[in-house]
Image (cartoon, rainbow, N blue to C red; front, side, top):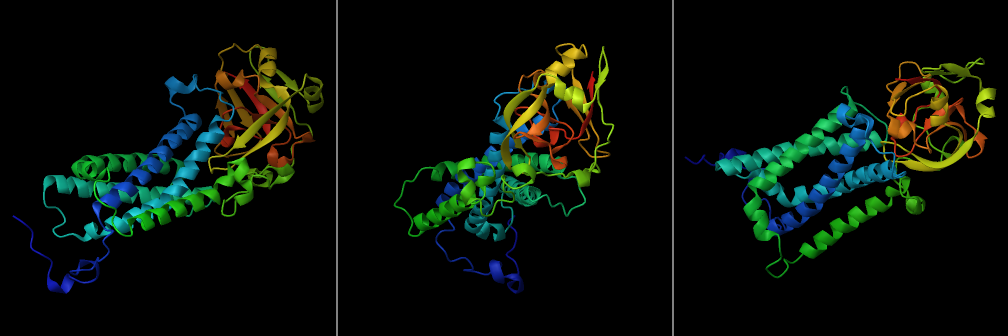
Length: 378
């Protein structure tokens, strides 16, 4: 039995007859924008999963994480933030085209229609929260009481679930309008061109925090990768970590079958190496530097570590979420992984981890532990 129409007193604003007059509120425009938005969302989701796995791998995968390609995390996390920012104008345009249907009466006519509305509710709610919190994360601003990373992860699954449900319910209509079969609707090309231009513009003025050749256009990017101590940005300073001054009697402690300690002078007397590696952070920015120090595998070999051993790295930082980090052997044994003592030929600034920090290829910046005090073979 069909639901009655809303009373005349309620048929105001978007519920009144003839409230939506533009001819562009139509399926073909919605399908084209949906393709673009879907591509951005799925790219953002896939690269976000890569970031999550690298930061918190499941046990069965932990020992198989790759240290190559060297620039891998820089590329995937850069694409994650770029596609997430691009999705914002795409979502706005998509909502403008389809929002008359949000006020259709009755709200659910059939089971398929009810599933379609449920998919829209899940997709829209999760996607709005995902993009809003993700954008503020690039600014390192967290004005909410819940943990960002875990919430962001589960919202992504809800958004993708809502997207798949929406596609399944709208499949026949999407298939009908997937290809252009009629003369273009007046104004459609202008609308799609404007949306494409907006996406291109917002990408050009923010992607420079990751893409070096766009750095001169990085007008709205939250971070400039060339600004910071010694020309490299930092997310967490020594003052914030409570390690402004390293102890004057600092020693590096290496625990294993043959434990030992090293002073800074003894570290500097060991064979030194220089590697060119990026620091790539979850907020989307990255910057390359030349790091000088001792290969981590040399320190582990001296301690008698087995080739497949895990390494626990402990920082002087007290109470931080990444004060202790566990490194799989695929990174610990990589010839490019170093206990860095220098950056671009200079002694590490305290904000970059003086007296020593870990730098490894294809790792999130939060796992490039600063202010290292102890290496432990597990």
